[in-house]
Length: 307
Image 1 (cartoon, rainbow, N blue to C red):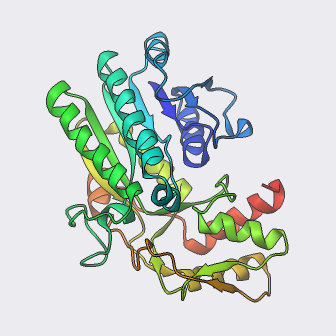
Image 2: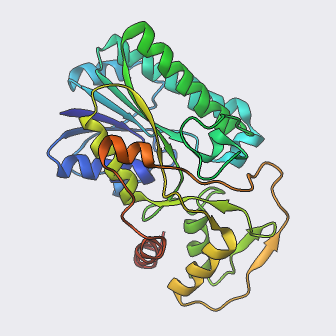
């Protein structure tokens, strides 16, 4: 199968590219390299440094005979979306719309979209949240992802474009960017390896559903088997507070340090947890990597690579 992966030089995207290639698919990577890293690009993939909004992308899709688009290029920071909603929308909504236009004009059969679980559901009514949970995002990032989900329904009804929507929990693992405000695991390990203490926002009792990147990759592999359109949560169904996570991180890294605290972010959700039963029922998917195992593998990566 000929697959285009946007954001294929980034954290999640590059892992997906590796898995697709290991499973004998032909992969074309699109990345504007604003956050991607050249060393993450699989040498067996065809790479184009180009934005998803570049009009030349249609030529690449046609030339490479692309059948499936896996869309992971995005502005991923909730705090950045709050600071600059216009820039967030330009990347996550307008950029994706231009990609979708290219997809239907080039006859793409399937579109896999990386959405978000926590940010779309907002403050949850129940735990863990199913896919039919009320959608009430509280920040522009969540609004942009929900908007694209709506457009995907339109493109299916209007053009017959089939789409698989994955609503991720908090994905972590090797290659995660530690130099922003998103990705607490990477940020904390980066600070520890620099001899700095982790900084927790607020009381640290806010919870998230932390899912290891390899489990997310497996869902993207299985999605290639699906013929129709559907929406799935990709999480563990377990809540972990930032305080609990920090304790595990310090244990795995064998660091003994005082943890610093700072004021709570006004836009931050209090609790988030995703029900994955629908994905298990459709594709026999379930998370395989425990939080501690994933944290250990992630720490080894950061320790050895100095990123």
